[in-house]
Length: 401
Ligand code: RM4
Ligand code: MN
Ligand code: MN
Image (tube, rainbow, N blue to C red; front, side):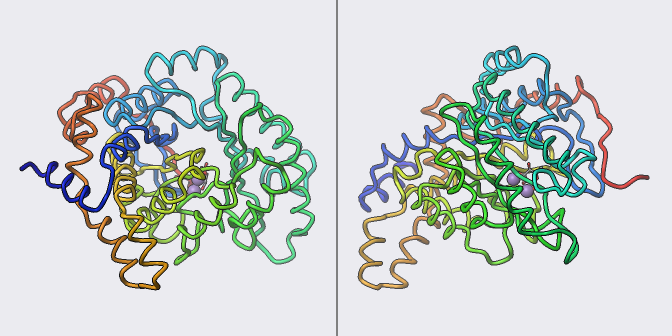
């Protein structure tokens, strides 16, 4: 008996519908970020990678390559102005020809001189106007590219007690988001991301899920919370936040990455595979409540080969999802209802400890893919080819030399 057949037998004994699990795995959708394909990294040294994408076209081509290996990464998030072009319809067409679509549009509200004291929360009216105008421009880009997500993250906050009026900034925050909300294309969503610190350290205007959720409630049904797995204090239970927001119908999406200390932007599922699994179990057990959740990677690889890092990231999400899909939820609920504390926990760990690799290999085979995407990547000459074509571009860093 093959390892796959053995696994199917074990799962069926637990009452798991393996065909349904396979269908779900084939329909998984992990969006990759354009900024993960270029040279990006820390505020210290950004190490250049030979072959890293320099243009938005190269980023889309690389994303399409990752999709061709995994079959589950069919869209790409863009950051504006990093990925700005004069001809959006042509870019949309180029993406389509490569086999990917344009996903979330991320306004950049932290890199202009005007944003020194914040963007939409700045005490400077001109900065606030610029920030809203930029987000409205991003809504127009959504129209042109067919994107249905405006993904908002602010660097706004203060560094010193008394630096600014916190409640006044809260009013500016609401006003700026409300103005932007009016320009969202119909059928699209604004995802509101939070982060508890950095670049501001005394207070952050959108610091946690409660703040983001409160803003979304004020804005309306097209506004939902985005959970970036790197943006929480040590020990925060992210699966709980996910469950709460799902149940309230306000979980819009994820930015996946792993963290050891803060917003480390490391490869999702490396530091925290069990945490990632528990997040996915909440999503799976919420059923239809999770239907519109957008799954996006938000990582900046500094010392890792870019493509291999992105590939590993997508695969780690696939493993976590597969393990969440094979949880015996019936037994879990029975154990929970019976107050069986450790029995319930063991139902989860039983799925977590299951080797899902034969299942994933089978799913990939059925999708017409190589069952081992890392081996396919290594055997392929794509990385070599782009290294030769693109060479090594200068990579910056935050400090002057
Ligand atoms: C932030 C946040 C945003 C990302 C920026 C570049 O920490 O995670 O999602 O757009 O970094
Ligand atoms: Mn993020
Ligand atoms: Mn981040």
